[in-house]
Every structure is written in structure tokens, then in C-alpha cells.
Length: 262
Image 1: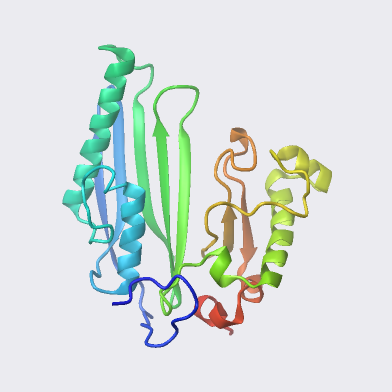
Image 2 (image 1 turned 180 degrees about the horizontal axis):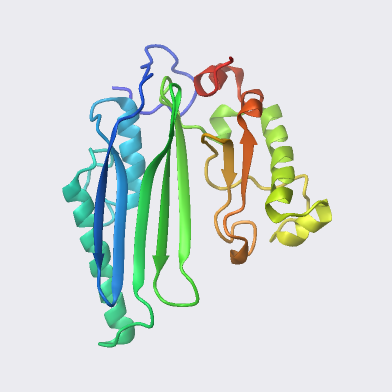
């Protein structure tokens, strides 16, 4: 049974999902004077298809169901009971941590674990999911992590730098990244841009974000994690490349599956 197509070798017998991915929103929420836990998941209703299998796998990874001992099936359908268990275990972890640090005293501010895993974009050709996780366990500030994934519905292939972009496309991507980061930081020169970044000496050889690129209504998005390329105060530097330019960056063999020609 074909579940995930990591490369470009298998092109026959693919499934076509022209309709939107139907979802149910599953939530958990619990708060007291010590800690707050909130979880929200757009769970695929479909339980049989390869695309649903991969989306469920993405949700499991970000909920960390295996680590929490909630599930040993990394792609099983997402249920209310599963999300409830994740929430209860996260709450128990925070309460144990608070007790260890503060004894019986309340922390200055409630510790937090808040997760949203949403279907961000869905059209005839692709679907994008985004997981946003905010944690606060004391200290000066909390930490936000955001991970996104785009799948071709036809190939059931995850969009990544390695499998979807041509060598020429990657070069053009870095050029667009440089100009996009200038807009993000509101600077105009290469030297000013370098001054905003950490560990970067050459604006013409910027490191690509560690997370995969993804596609939204606005275009192709490249997003860095906090601290990945800039100080915490810079947030998550993000560059969006318009739809009109995406197709030219992709390998011809996959271009139609992600961004068909009009």
C-alpha cells in the first residue's frame, strides 16, 4: 500500500483528490491558577486515503502522541479521546514542573502549552497544514514554534527543497529570499540586511530555512524559526513568493501537480 511518496520515481496509479479535505475541529482546554493548556486540531474526516494518512502523521508528530504514550500508531485517525489524553498529559507535566520549581507556591504567571494544528490552505491540487505551538515555563518570555507542510493531492508528495525545486529554481529562490528578507526587516541594502542577521556573512548565500517551504493563498512561503537566523526580537522571519513566480522554480515533473499552468 502506497502511503508516502518521498521522491519522484513513482508516478503511476496516483490518486486525485479534487475536492477539499473535509475536517472536524477537535479541541481541549483546561486552565487553573498554575497552568493553561489548549489544543485545537483540524482532523481529517477521511480515514482511508494516502493523503489523510500523511496529514494524520503530521498531526501525530506535532502532538507528540508517541512520546506522551497516547498512541503507538503514528498515522491513526485523530479522535477527541486522543486529544484529551494529550492535553491531560501536558497539563500533568506542567503541574509537576511547577511543583518542582516553586514548591507549593504559584508561579508569577501561569505556565502554558498551546497548540493549533490547522488546515491552512486547500485547493484542487494541494493541501497545506500548519502546526503552531506556544510554550511558557517561566522566564522572560515564551517560545513559539511553527511547522508547515504542503502535499500534492495527486502525487501524495510533500513539498521540500530536495524533491520539488530545480537547481536553477533553488538559485532563484535564494535571490527572492534575500529581497524578501530586506522587506521583512525594512532595509534596502545588503549590508543593512547582514546587520539584522546572526551568523550570516554573505547575503548572496543565505541558508534556507530548516523547515520545508509551503504554499498558502498568498504564495510560496519560506519561514525561519525564532533564533534560526536572527535574534528572538525578530520573530520568525518570513518571505512569501507570489503564485505567479512559483511554477518557474519547480522541477517540470512536479510543477503541474503543485501549480498547474493556466
